[in-house]
Length: 377
Image (cartoon, rainbow, N blue to C red; front, top):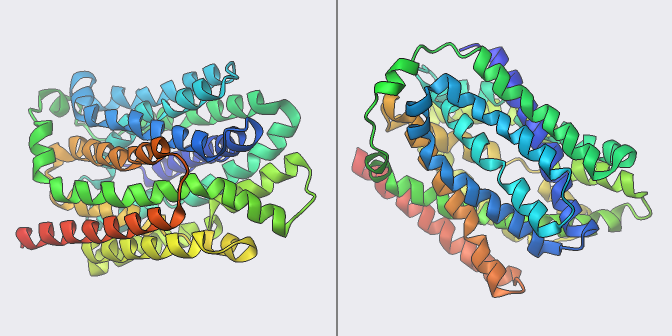
């Protein structure tokens, strides 16, 4: 695996996600008047399409791993279609569908990263080192492009960016495992059963994280208006994008730190600490406003959760099971995100009640992964 190329491709992909997601959440919630409900529809639907990542193993065996990577190009096609749609609900669902081809591709990339890695935590952190910074760059690009060409220009820009990573991953795919993949008889259900406790654990904590991401756009926008009143509309998108990216400037250092901590102290311990941190993060963020709320949002927790869990799950899978296993991780991550839809149907969200739910889910998440680790001793 060419680390530099894979790290570059991953960073470019993060720029695309930053431009798309940061713009679309504020565009749907504020400009189109959809509020938190439409953002929750976007995020919930995105995870619904991500659920299809459970097919990653089957698709890679059918087409071969290298060819399956090119499914990522469908993201660009869908974004070009999005530039033609103005209906808020239809737009939210179409944007959400991008998750399916992306996570099929990403499951294969993760298999390449973790295969035969001597220090898996550090290896993964190096490949994803530019994720946070790329996300921030993409977020800040939306303001100027929106000012020049409107929402159509932002979607076209995102389409061009999204076309790059799959081409790089494909061209520099070095593992000669396509034939092995075609002949593999890995059973998806058996892989899910093998890692069920950790899969349910990540689903529960992802529910907490994604609910926070749904609540954040309007809260951050209000705090931005309090701290920086009177900004022109295009500048609001730029500043909001920078704020929403949250701690992107130090993300590369945090990812390397996370990888080293995982390799030194074990993925299990880092994962437990990340879950506890997310519970504390939710309460502190929702109970503050203005500058303090903005500063809290800048704390970069996701690298610890991402690196620790992916390293943890890879430890218990064979090389042939990795694509199916990571597809299952994405699928259960999707289930966690989709739990938001139940709150959406319930009507107005009470942050205290949801905070209690998040706390309970976090404790259950810790208990599940602790029991799984105990059984594996």
